[in-house]
Image (cartoon, rainbow, N blue to C red; front, side, top):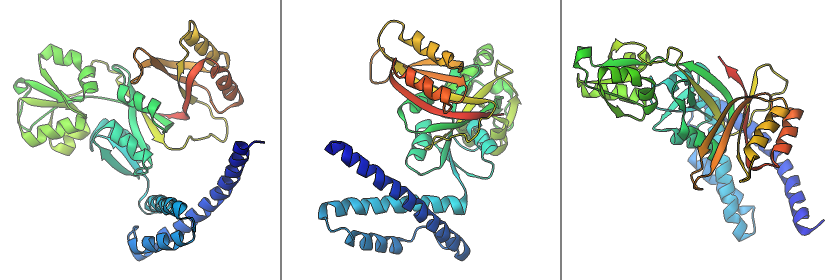
Length: 362
């Protein structure tokens, strides 16, 4: 055993002990949260945290390591506060948009009792989970009539979160206008590009001009606040109720089976303890630049009993004319067949990422 192997073995032993101590510390944090809830105290106690840092720093004699240990303590306390907040306030769910957006509707269906935290775009919602500000994020990945949500797919490939659940939400777009406005008044419609695409036939038939917004509900909010009778928003009936708008026409999307897939993203990959019917897995990978590499990868996935439901390619942002692939397949990637498949698949992939296994919610 060389020096590197010895060091890694020691680190593994220390990490094992630290995991047990971490759980013990968080159990103590639960008691702190219960006391603060009973006494009506705030989660953050800056005086106590300053004492913890001062006392902790004194335990480390090495001056160089002392600074790192102080940062370690600060991170520990930030995690403890986040856990206490979850115990006191429930889960914090990030989504892109505002109340009344379809993402908010999906979030409410999945987590009816949790705090729903809005963010201005997909990336901000995603990063809020990565940095510990929220527990999970609910983001759209694909629409049945307008295809994938490319920004989210790119985040899935480049980021660190896992898909632990997926829900298919039936989406019905309505035309919303200021109270008193009529259909003949409307000259311009505003909405998210996905919604505009899903209603393209309706928009073209009426000759409306279009303007893109970052979110359907934000478009509805703009119409409500500006009061321009010539501008209508394409959004949900819930958004009309929230912002006091009139529904001029309902279900204007060209597909009557318009459905959007939303995924639940978290920092931890959920492991199913028992085999369940309806398990699905998501893989993302790049293949080597050689003839037949993609065909071999697809054949391997099928060989081990995984029924592919989705296969998409996306251009990589850092390499010109290079692509990565997104696969949804029926089957449990954490099964013995799944583990064998991954071992073989790695032989033909430059990069292979298991994004998660989930039971699709209806």
